[in-house]
Image (cartoon, rainbow over all chains, first blue to last red; front, top):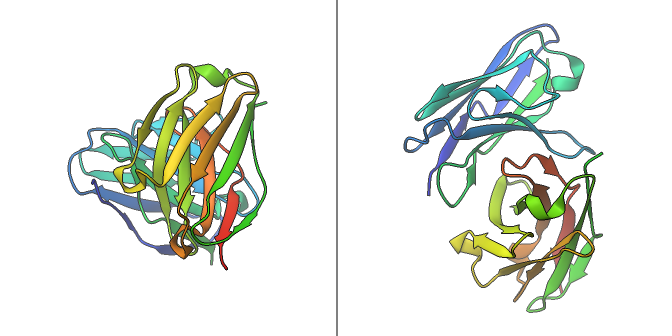
Length: 107
Length: 115
């Protein structure tokens, strides 16, 4: 199975700041990577697919980069609604696998 | 709007089975994959498998072979997952998610296995 390693596990930041979350695959997955947001009481939300393609409705302050084994989710100018848990997920091969998540908290 | 409605919380006994549902609306059910994902308490997300309701094709994570069975009813736009031979390890929240990229998610169904 492709192991997805996310870092950091926890991240504290203030509104207006920018943050980056790393996701590393145990083998090359080309650009077959998606990012999801999890918030209490809300359905999980697809933010980005194909490594860097914003899903319709994802604010432009979100961006994704990387290919092969190293990927990054960047959120510029954090807003209060962005404090959540973020997961990466590879769909290059079966079984589909997720990173362990990054909890973004308000500092 | 796209919506996935999942069945309610289940409290089931060890060694039994449970069948949970995911009713889709607002999109073409038969033309989109439906995935199932498990989240154990305090843990991350595990992909269980998908079903393509248009033709009934399925793909499973080997880890869940024999544990999960995915079906779909086109007439009611509802996907089902049956979990068998339940143990405490199967206590988790189970999500359905539609689309190739898990484009849209259900709210989750909590399954607790306890005697």
